[in-house]
Length: 455
Image (cartoon, rainbow, N blue to C red; front, side, top):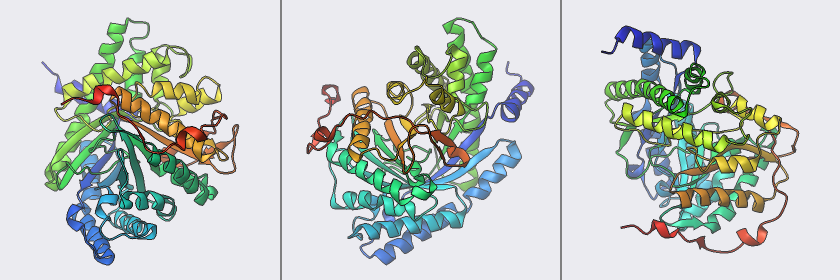
């Protein structure tokens, strides 16, 4: 029989000593009913719906946290991709940027940390509205505090839109230049996706998919420190014991997220969507995915065996999660952002972890090249080439991959970028200096792989 007293004590210990937290409650809001050909009216409707829908989100999160003793770090909002919402009213990039400022004002009014969904889905082609939104991203992100942006550039079913990949390289560099005084911080809020999920609660890639209900509660839970502590107790044991330990720990962590999600859903009278169990690190000591890899048996993340260890970790986390909740979704697995993980930062500084090794690791982790600071003089075509590589990994392997690259203007290899808070700091990583201009300048799209043809 389950000993409830022991379970409660164990959960309390995970919270107090092992950095277990609910990383975010994210309220998804459909803005499809706000669409209007008049830009003023569109902005009025968007602001009004967000205020009405999210007015109790922060208060509810704080009440649940206080009553259950579970830290809920962020309260966030995701909205319908704005390229769709603004298509009837926006005639120039500034029109879309104005919507970004409306989103920012609404997010500030309800008190959330971030609002995601300044997004376009262009895996097969771009509409005029899609292209306008993408071109507006530097202006939008440099003039707002809480808006996050994402662009889905490819999918297993459609291939990779290389016209959009090429454009994104230019956009990232432009966004970096507009925020050069803050270590190109706009790029920390911009991510390029392949196979983007509709129900991701984590920023910067969250948006409210068009297949979702009008309103939905999604929860992201994280516990790298909990997993590491559990593995310390089975040091030197077999792979079977290792896997079972990760799986059981992930089960317990997911149950915490399920509890919070259900309670938030009940109190706000909004449907529960998914729990995203992602081992999302923070700069705090003891809250690192890289440290888990070291506990598995590596001297540093990046050492030989790293990809295999990460594959094992990711798979067992998912297996434990799906046993704990019928609605596990989003990204769910292990994140490997450099700036947000002190162990990853240490590995880069020691020379154990390179951009190429990180790319290999993205084949088996839950997202991709995340929060990678690169020299500010990196060419736009090189950025596009790195994105194309990451999109190809996602397309061929039928998984979500992403790239959040930060060309830090005025800094080079050996320097550090400071982003603050959960975003942490990052060493500037070297980038392959050989060119790919002729490749990314080709027009059109890379076709979907043969195994995509299923019906």
